[in-house]
Length: 119
Length: 112
Image (cartoon, each protein chain N blue to C red):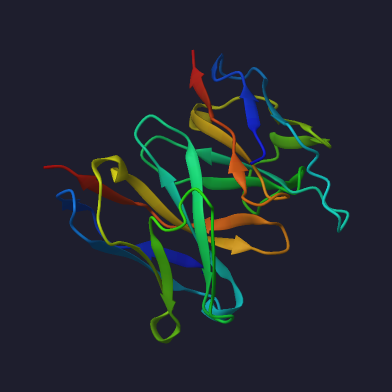
């Protein structure tokens, strides 16, 4: 059974750093891209970027490039989303999802991580 | 970026009645490989999104057959033949044909 399990909710102050994780199981981690999707309060979904551990590659939505860093650790089948300096506007739920390359879509999703940035 | 426009944004429906959501893109989603990459997702309250439909009309495993997808080029539709209580939530379409991929604004389906 494919599963994506994300780390728990986080509360940070503006300017602080943060890394959240997405641990996968039930399939070969190195054969799929993992994507991150932002869901801001009261807004729609926004695709942020992807990482592929097998290719050692990342792709970013230009709107998020330079704002976040996406990475993966093949040894523990885990993907990460990282901020160096958080802003209040980063407050959102962040989802990881497995990218199905044959369908150009996201077939399995994590449960979401709520990130709250407040002074 | 490809603009994806859903309508309506709010859809009150009566149990047992049909429902239809439109998704329009400002560029054709027919990819050079011959496939059309349009997906539909359901997000129930408090849950993460769940894919219902991929490549316009293919239902994911476990998705009830009352859900169907259709369309081509720039115009697509998600239909629910007979709405059930568990169908309440927000529905998103997503285009995967053009980089960066983009989602529609979401359509909130509420049961009257």
